[in-house]
Length: 122
Image (cartoon, rainbow, N blue to C red; front, side, top):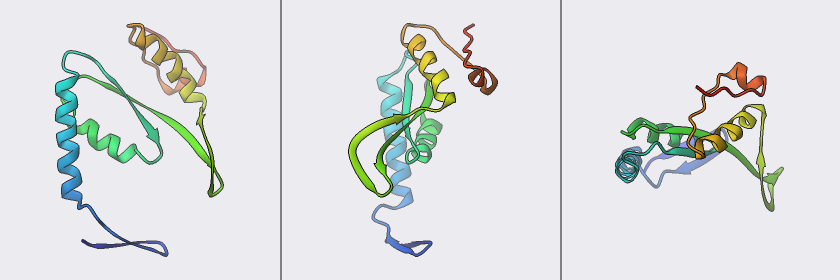
């Protein structure tokens, strides 16, 4: 495997980019099959998952949606042992939309609407 240097840290890769891409494609194919005929909402945990989530969404072949949640369990460099959800003003709009989505509605909003804490449904 190769050596990667980021700032003052050195890492040895254990899985190649090609192997990861292959597995992401396999996972997307399985999810597309499992959720065929549905409109799943995928949730990804920020910040670490955003690249994986983007790669996965590129490979999904069915209609779907994605949103992100931000969780925190660290204070500085030490784990608190408790997970808390970090909600910002955009996610407040998502939470309302998600609740309606689960009841069968399809909500959409723009950044401006989320700023106003107003979610509109067609």
